[in-house]
Image 1: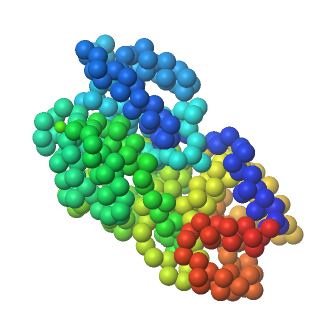
Image 2 (image 1 turned 90 degrees about the vertical axis):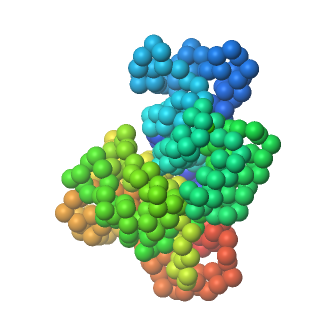
Length: 355
Ligand SMILES: [Ca+2]
Ligand SMILES: [Ca+2]
């Protein structure tokens, strides 16, 4: 049965991902290119018709959300808010398996950009000194990551929000992924009866652990999601695994790549695309991995009375299936892991054990 699961993970990249929000590298770069093309013009704004065409190409037709009045323009001053809007909508070109930013990151970094811009001349641009101050005073990211971004923007006199986000995305590290304790910590984020918002107190505890913004900007970590809480949880897991710097010690863990792969796999089972697996949607998984048992019992074991499986529970189940199903394999893997430091190697090791 593990052979089947490994093969399934291997071929995930052949499927079109059912991912819905956030910004991929190509989407951010498209906006950067729009600005570069029109920066020399008299108005220094992206023509409405061009952006409208881009939205149409992305299968999005609610233009009133982007252009609520006839006076609305997309220029440096409004670019950060436009990126937040663009990140929050479903786009045909979205793809979780591409290099991409979750809406958590788009919101955090775009809003932080605006805060910093308004401290000086509110022109939608940050000069080099303002940018360095933003990293040194407001963000607590990996120092190498911050240095790479500062160097990337060394030659620019000033940057706008799209260029800022593009530089972050270009250099952001993979993060440490998620171990069993961290997956368990995410379980109480989703409450089936609260469809609009993840559990606030649990979120706040986890954001404190992440510690990526200074205390004065913790309010920027309060996110309003356009999606259901079940979908927001999927993005949260990617966000947390990418910015997680906690050492896993001797614990086995899923890499960020694994987490993205599992969310994509989950979306293939989630036929009605509501962000949870129902009893019927769980059936193919049950038949693959729990044949001979009672599906009601298996569902109850993982989901309790709710009978709806969230992505966090799905990850927990796979963690048990992969790492805890066979003590011999687990022990062998722990021994093999002794000298493996790179998360990517764990992914390869996973493949070699189960294939
Ligand atoms: Ca400015
Ligand atoms: Ca579903």
